[in-house]
Image (cartoon, rainbow, N blue to C red; front, side, top):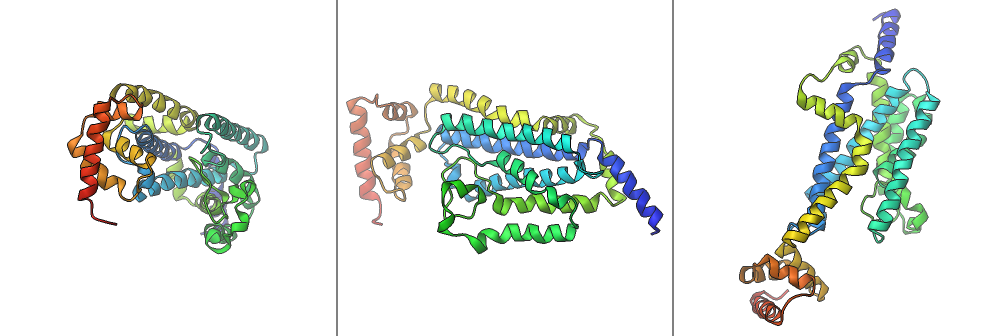
Length: 324
C-alpha cells in the first residue's frame, strides 16, 4: 500500500475517532449491566435474602474481576480514542476531575456505610490513577507499551512482599495480603489492562477496518438502551447501589433473612466451626424451616420455646455429623 493511502486511512480514522462510537458505548453498557447483576446478587447475599454467600464462590469472584477488567480495557481504548489527534489537555483534565471526584465520593459514602471495609482504591480510583500513569504511553510505540503492560500483569507474582503491606502502599497491590475492602482494584496488575488496550487502540485506529466500527450506529431498542447506559455509566455507577440496597433492605425488613444464611450466622457467632456450620445448618433447617423464627432469633426476639426447639435440633444434628 502506498504511503499516501496510509496517510488517508490514518486521517479518516482520526476524523472518525473524534466522534462518539456507539460500539464503545454498547460495550460499556454491557459492562454496566453486568456490574448491576453482580451488585444485586451481592446485596441479596449481604442482606441475607439468599442463603448463598457469593464472596465465597470462585465463579462470582471471577465474574467481578471480569467486570473490573472490562472497564479498564475500555478506559485504555478510550484514552487512545480521545487523544488520537493529539493530547487534549482540557478534555483530559475535565474527565479526570469527574472520575476522581466520583472516586472520592465513593470513599466517603462507603466509609460511613461500611467503616470496616470501605472502598479506598476501587475501580474508579484505579481508572483515575491509571489515566494519569498512561499519559507517557500515548506517544510511545505500541510494542513497547505492550511490553510494559505484560510487566504490570506479572509484577504481583514477582515482587509481592510483606514489606509492602503498609496501608499507604495498598494502592499498589504488591503486599503479601489483600486489605479488607468491598472493592479493591490496585495498580498492579490492573494497570496492565489499561495499557494493553491503549496500545491496541492506537494500532486499530490506523486500520481501514476500524472505520466501519466507528460508523456503526445502534438501530434497535436493545442496543439503544445499552448505548444510553454506556453514556450514563458514571451516574449509573454512583446511584445504582443506593437504589438497590434501599429497595432490598425494605424487602428484607418484611420477609426476614433466609433461614440458611441466618443459621450459619448464628452458628459462627456462637464460635461454631466454619467448616461444620453449613452441614449442621442444612440438617437443622430440615427440622426448623420457618423463616420468621430465624428472623426472631437474629433480632433476639425469640421466645424460650423457639430457643429450645433450635437447641434440640442442633444437638441432634451434631450427633449425626461425622467427626472432623
